[in-house]
Structure formats: C-alpha cells, structure tokens
Image (cartoon, rainbow, N blue to C red):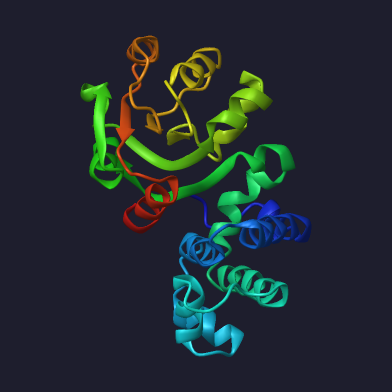
Length: 245
C-alpha cells in the first residue's frame, strides 16, 4: 500500500459522511455501548487514548461500552466520533482511507459493515481460525495471499445493486476476502460474483444454516475458496477480524 493516501482520505466531505454514519449508528443502536466499542476497535483506538482526548477517565469510556453508564447523549457521541477521526489523522488517516472509496458514494457505503486493507498479505488459510470457520470448498487455493477484507450487508447489496455496482465493494484491491452477512443460502452472492469480471481471493459466508449446492458449485468453477463462519453474531465476527488480522 502506498504511503501517500489518496486525496479522498483528506476530503472534509468524506470525513463528515463517515462521522454522520458512525454517530447515527450509535444513536440508533439498541446497544449504544457495544456500538461505541465496535467503532473504537475499528479505529484501533485504546480506551485511554479516547479518554485523554475527551478529558475524562478511562473508566468512563469503559462504563459506556459495558452499559454500566446510561447511553451517551448526542454531545458525547459527537465528541467521541470527532475523537476517533482526530486520532486516526494523527496515525496517518489509515482507517479513513480504508473507508474513503466507499464514502465517495453514499449508497454503496451503507452496505459496507467493515473494510480493512492489510499492510502485509495474509494467507487465506489464516482466516479459518479467525472467523471460526469451516472450509466448504477450495482447499487447494487457501495458500493465496489476501490483502484486505470487506464485510457486506448482503441483503441490501443484492436487492439494491447491480453486478457492476457490486464491483465497488472491492476497495483498493480485488485480492481480498469478501464477507457476506445476513444470507440464507449463499446462492445470490455467488451468482452476482459470477456475473462480474472481478473475483475475490476468498469468500466468507455468515448466517446460513446450510449453503446452497449451486453456490458451492459456482465457487468451485471460479476457483474461489469459501469459508462458513460459525460466529453467533456479525459484531463478534468483525471484532475478531479487526483484532487478529
């Protein structure tokens, strides 16, 4: 990955869209504390870093995240979001950069639950343990390098986007893992991939009790390994990937 970040990552409009997205998700969440923690971890910010910027004790951040303190008000949320963005800028705007391609279009950004670019490649086989996965097909291809991942709300992606528009979820490289959540069988995502010229290095499914045989057949034809994540929730899956990859 080049050291110089694209101008998108420095664009104030992009940062404002990201801030609005994060703040809205926190305020509307059934568990605001867990959502605070999720975004703090996405930005790789420690509790004491956030507390220092907000001029509060680290225990205050911990209490919000654990639910011991009542849900934060809008002013606290605003300061929290601005803190995450400011901290990221002091570290080179890495996380803002990771989201910048998606933020260039509001609609595509709404279906992205998380995205990350790796500074060093990760082997596809390393994802198996990280996502508590079961390999469904493509075992011979698990030695390939993966340079990032994108977690997608598959229901919205399939309903709202054409195969051409779905190509935008690849971020800065197609040599990445696409993580499809909220799916029932896996058939629709695989058909969408089949119809595009861009192919991911790895596919991870989250949600289905059983993956459709046609989906597996399509993956085998495209020589794409498929892993089924056994994490109970999407938040747990994202937290594990953020922490371990």
